[in-house]
Amino acid sequence: MTNALSRLLETRDWLLADGATGTNLFNMGLSSGEPPELWNADHPDRIAKLYSGAVESGSDLFLTNSFGGNASRLKLHNAQSRVRELNRLAAEIGREVADKAGRPVVVAGSVGPTGDIFAPMGTLTHELAVEMFHEQAEGLKEGGADVLWVETISAPEEFKAAAEAARLAGMDWCGTMSFDTAGRTMMGVTSADLAALVEKLPNPPLAFGANCGVGAADLMRTILGFVAAGTERPIIAKGNAGIPKYHDGHIHYDGTPELMGDYACLARDAGATIIGGCCGTMPEHLKAMRAALETRPRGPRPTLEEISAKLGAFSSASDGTGDDAGAGRERRSRRRG
Amino acid sequence: MADEEDIILSELDDEELVLQMMDDLYDGLKEEIEEAVEILLERGWTPYDILTKALVAGMTIVGADFRDGILFVPEVLLAANAMKGGMAILKPLLVETGAPRMGKMVIGTVKGDIHDIGKNLVSMMMEGAGFEVVDLGINNPVENYIDTAEKEGADIIGMSALLTTTMPYMKVVIDALKEKGLRDKYVILVGGAPLNEEFGKAIGADAYCRDAAVAVETAKQMIARRHNQMG
Image (cartoon, rainbow over all chains, first blue to last red; front, side, top):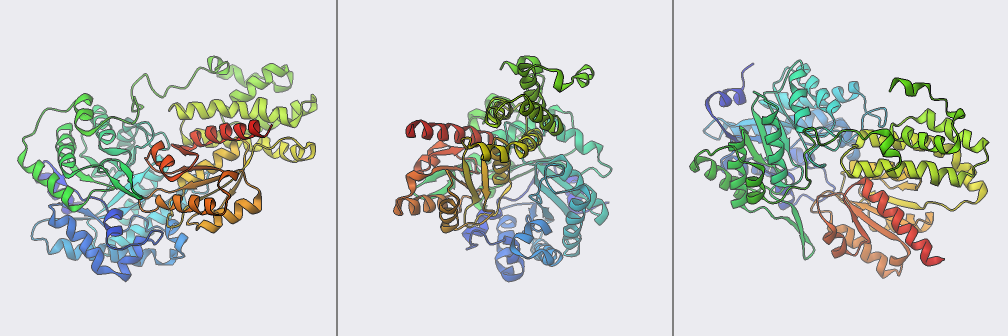
């Protein structure tokens, strides 16, 4: 299959993805608790503005406003019957913005987690997850998304289910997990685990990587983990614009556009190909990232020391890869604690 | 590991059995935990001793290894499930014998916030640690927390928010409790975002809990402190 993304990947050695969706929509008046996906139908102009903000800031790829557009999430708002429609609209609005850009821009159909926990602890089964993701994928495909973009996943089972849904929908896809717990995902997946997992899928993603998590420094360490695993596949880096801080009743992300420019170049030098932001990343951040990527020469792969010097300290001592971390305790020694 | 399959729980002495229960909790073996609880009951252990000396002690190890990045959510949930198996046997007996309660928590995501995985994990782990949990679900206004906590006679109010736009609502709930003169009646724990203790202090919570393991540990400490103050 060729598509807008695979063609760009053939000719470019880095691509700028987009930034935050939620942060931008809240700034446009989305009230908390309201599912953003409903705006695809109720306020298409604002969604077009969200996408245009990324395109005008130099993004080569943007994600559709469909992160929570699966039946399980929409059910919380009694909108589970609108999965197909809301996803189709999310992609349609995106298609229109991308086609007017005057350069190739990829419409990536965002697919976020179901929010459910897999059996036996939770209620989610592989079949149910595939069914929900497939329904969403068909809507995004119908609306003209170039690829599916599975993101913020924690559980390997959910990642596999999304891959199968992409296969059923006949779409190429990209997938990222969120590594927010001592360098691993909430469910314990390491960067090396994900690099190995994608190669075992019958339809591996065009690119894979990390998004969200805990600040840009941690995300960079995860990127180095993918590289160390020896992957040949394009790597995606979509980190948050710093860490949220509380000031006078409001919360804002502390990452400046300058910091995100540094992050973008570090991500590229570390070996990432598709580079963007996540929570807190606004158009001004994207512009700084584009400018930095275009003007600064490639450097050597950064060390962990260089990353923390530029982007701040890591949230944990280890990222869970390697021999020293994550090994189960010996039972006997554990007993006496 | 193969030789361990040969362990017959009823042949272990009390001390060995309790240690074995800690291992079995760690490995999330529900049936083994249920069997061991029954054995200890037959041997005349009080339900409260089984709860605190075997189950809670075992879950404390699980919690510590979760905190230290040795165990992750799937293993912890299995352990909590095994614990719940034992609790199901003990619960009616604890009530009958008038044993001290671990404590009761009312928990929910705050108004405007629909991100509930973290809240669900805390809920499952608190139950796993022996607490009673009343789960309010998502998107809760002030009155849900306060009315339910009052009605249920809760000890702890837990609030979760993931969004930068919804976190300040935690302060709204705390301020409302203060206005009603109820603030000091409850331990207030907040969590759900990559923030820090400063945030918890700034809004007047008793603690900010980084993850579910920290929430359980903090809850245990705060409840113990309360009991000490009362005694």
